[in-house]
Length: 190
Image (tube, rainbow, N blue to C red; front, side, top):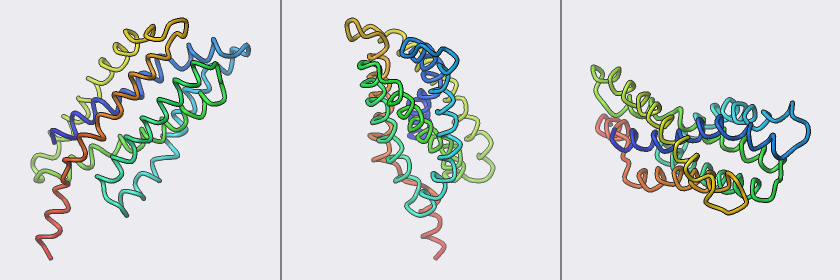
C-alpha cells in the first residue's frame, strides 16, 4: 500500500501538469488559438483509449509489469514533450500528450491493486488513501512545474516537463519492490 500510495502521488502529477500547462504552451506554439487546447484533449483521449489496453496488459503480464511499463512510457513522453516545447513542435507536443494520457490509464489502476492487497474490510479505506494521494499530486505537480519552468534559459516550460519526467520515473524505482498480495493469495489456494 505504501508503494502504491507514493507511486500514485508521483504518477498522477501528469494530469494536473498537463491541464495547467499544455494549453498555455500550445497557444504560444501555434497561431490558431482555438486548437490550443488540443494537447489537453488528447491527454483525455489517450487516457480513455488506454484504459482497455491497461486492463488487458495487466491481466496478461500482471500489475507490477503494467505499472513499470506505464512509468517508463510517461517518463519518455514527458521527455519528448520537453523536446517539443524546446523546439516549438506542436504536432510532437500533441503526440506526447496523447501518450501521457495512455500512461494515466495505468495510474487509474492503482486503486484496484490496492484493493487486492488488503482484506475485504479494509478495501474502502485503502481506496480512499489512494484517491487522497491523487489530491496530493494535484498540489505537488503544478507547484514543481511552476518552480522549474525557467530551468532552461530562453525556453519557458521545458524544465517543467523535465521535472515531470523525473517525477514519473520515481514509480519505476518503487515498483521494483512491489509484490501484489493477490498473487500470493492465489498461489496459496492452489
